[in-house]
Image 1 (spheres, one colour):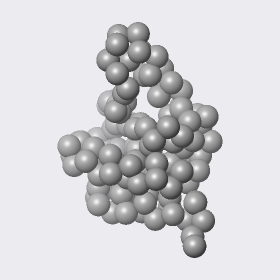
Image 2 (cartoon, helix red, strand yellow):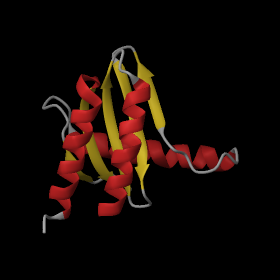
Image 3 (cartoon, one colour):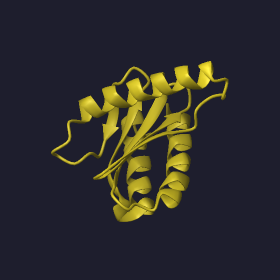
Image 4 (cartoon, one colour):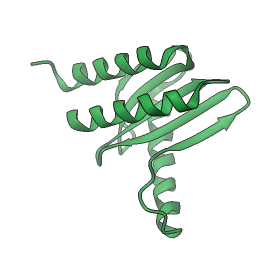
Length: 123
């Protein structure tokens, strides 16, 4: 039986393939910011991405709670050079996705939700 990390690596690979060239990096992260598996580009510090993703989701959950919006489904930062998206992967994990400028956000969101669901089942 493949290890948990090997299973997650397969999920991330499938996600990156299905989402196409829009994805420039992806990582599975624990809720405390520890990177489980990363496919980030070499110029990106995956450990920092993990910490940022966990912080973003924590803040998003607090804001959603204060506004009584329910549990967040995703958090997206759009900047001049691309997008960064964080989705919960069950109660214990996160999916962090770095996207190129002009990405087909609709398609990536569909693929990301499926990948996050798959990761939650492994974790």
